[in-house]
Amino acid sequence: MVSPQREPLPEPVVQVVTSIFNERIPFNRLLGMRLTELRRGWARIEFAANDDLIGDVSKQILHGGVLCALIDSAGGAAAMSSLDFTREMSVNTIDMRVDFLRPAAGAAFVIEGEAIRKGSRIVFTRVDVRNGDGVLVAGGHANYSILQRKQVNEPPQEFLKRWVQDGEDRDD
Image (cartoon, rainbow, N blue to C red):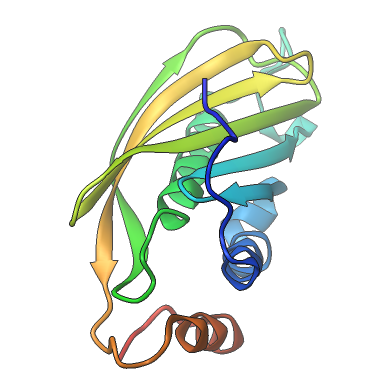
């Protein structure tokens, strides 16, 4: 599916996006997902399932909404990593399609997202969800609108640093 043969991102960008994803987004912490690798237009998330997220107790499989959230998060991280932070600042989900391919049973999952096309206003992504055995259990496509920076005179590194310190993705 997705290829990690992508251009590396500058380390400060990786640190900021990873910090935002793993520490500043409460929903990601609640589910227990962790962004573990990030390249330009590509992201990997690792996720450990727990009993509170089971949707079918007779088969012990994840709730479909959890899979949707994992796909949205991996697609969002891949979309974020494709941005040009000199003029772009964030993304918002605008559309998503999920295909449930097999029962999502297991304790560990790897989710990989890839930006397959980036325009001036929208990033299109593709995402795979695999169980601990590497079996593809779900896939999806998610699209994200790109939020433009208003103050392009501030260097991207300063903007990203302020974003993590202040906890705000505002650019005013």
